[in-house]
Image 1 (cartoon, helix red, strand yellow):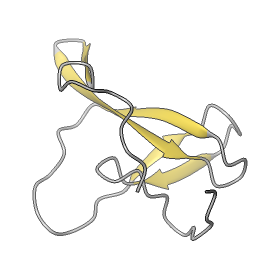
Image 2 (cartoon, rainbow, N blue to C red):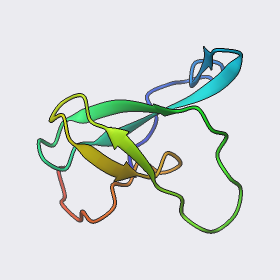
Image 3 (cartoon, rainbow, N blue to C red):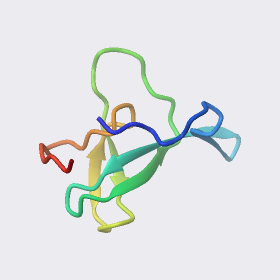
Length: 80
């Protein structure tokens, strides 16, 4: 799991046309770089993992990422 780089709850959300966007960090599976992503929807509570399609600004491809954990679907690379 990749930890959020934001220290306060007010820094992890942005205003988006009257709605609040959730900002998170994930690791691009193609390059290994950390990438900032955001979703406009509120995160659903529950045990089921929800993945959002996120356009990667590093490799220009679309990844399925869990905004809650930063996990990218279909990868098990260790970049540490």
